[in-house]
Length: 273
Length: 273
Image (cartoon, chains in turn cyan, blue):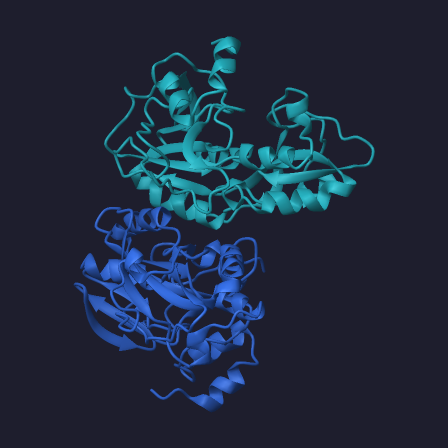
């Protein structure tokens, strides 16, 4: 699938609902960064109901990597608390289907895979605080470089629940020394989007061997006078779901998020029509 | 059970852990307002696992009245993410036991009632933002008057989940006109404790007929130059659980809360030893 640059440029001017309509119609299957500015974008985990209670417990116990912003009824594809007429089977640009902990397929529509026992869990994502950093004049290196954010397995143990546990996945963004405090304060305002950094400075303290060798995404330069800041990452729940080897899980494809109608700076993530 | 004023005065100087130890030993069974200052206090719902997923969905969809701060494993009485050695069977001063939606008993220990299918859900409570208001020089009338906060059934529909739904229960605190904005800003900092008010002014707009006739608690005076502010109330989930007529639910008794080891102004409600 190409990036569809002309369509992407056109979609950038449209509402969350119109972007979802284009995705639902099969017209757009690209990434969602920069689309529907100001609206909450969400990581996704769709899993059988028998695992949902443990997964929600896991998320509650690990709110920085796993901030729950919406949960569907069992077998119901709609997410009314996140927006108008959101159908999770069709309204995300691209999905990953995992069977027994292995990637089985990547698709743009999961209508054929939907089942009566499925529960959708939507989780906040880093776009929210990145947008806030940029608005406050704190540049985000990987965005400037047109790269995906560097992601690392950390040594930070997660609070387990049922079959779910392991270590937190973290991201790194270099910030100028004199803006580090601001970066903490700004991102702390978004607990629904990973909140404040979980650490800073020496990569070894968070279990990173080499900043230039992220496990996911692409490395970015840390310049003189900059401090590497580490945030909890929304890849954590995906990783934990895979490690648990559930028979069946669907997630979004990285960067291809659900766009909600909720404002990313709203007091709660509950949509009010 | 008497209020045990001498013991209460002594406990006010002690840590959350020491207060829980006194409660566990059966030495104290009074209210917890003002105890372990700065620590998070929690509303409680203990219910059979088969209702837990729907109840967590209900809380996620109604975060202002039902801010989840801790969830136990099924059948496990401990709450390690809220503090050291918290045993929910013994560490709350007083519990209410409901059967089929009716109050069946009020007890100071639920060890005999504990069962392998029970799940504890802890929810934030208004003590947290009330303390913050008082610290900021905004008096809280019912505290000054030594009364329980007035609570009302509102006309604000809750987002339903499974058997759970109905209308939000709200509290009222009168605030001087020139501090109303501050009261919003201060309480908004505590999303784990009902957050900002859900309304203000004319009681009719939130479905209250008579401010002097609260459904629970006691009325307080609204003086000239004051605005009644309405907050989502932690009685909401109790009320919703009762209306659902679950065969078995245990809650705390009003005012007799679980005291956690988590700081009430911490970024998350997850205890770090």
